Image (cartoon, rainbow, N blue to C red; front, side):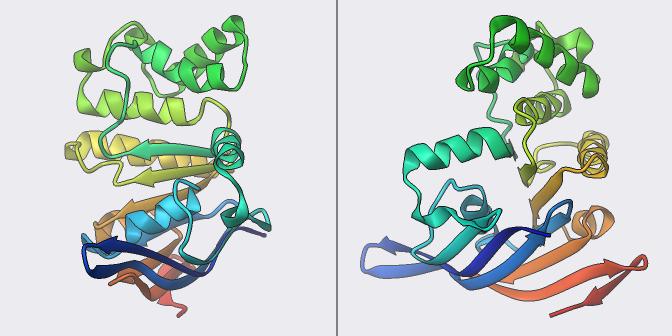
Length: 236
């Protein structure tokens, strides 16, 4: 069942007298439970595409559908509600709040959704246990390694039990071992039914973990490949 669809989506930016076509008419469908990768070099438009999927930005032209609902027609308060309930974000730079502990960072999204103090405490503890950080709950981000910070970010992304996890270069600032741990967590979440969308420039990372890869270049989808019977085959 299709969960997310970009239909002829374009995103333009005006830079002085130059019109930049960051996304230049792409169409894709991501099914519920997929592990999809959007892959391409720097400047290919992959992060812009992720921002459209995550309702962080709206298309200049075309449409973005989530659960068959055209979210490109919603206002900011409606988009914020969707982000809070349906989508969890993991970024390359972790985006943790420096003056909050690991536990408090995980609790924050629950506060915005009106959860009680007891609910926030319990859920944060459960999620930090899930990512093997029970002994780091009271630590601040600057007291954690890069891999530990990214695991806190994963726990925070899961706070409101979203259907979709969007991961933008989640291993970009990590060493190989920490990166493998983060990807193992994402694969486990996918096995539990979460839809994962990974943005990466790393071909091996995409092929080792995703089920379908959208390869982008110059704001367009250049190729779509899918893992079929453990082999990668071009489908478009």
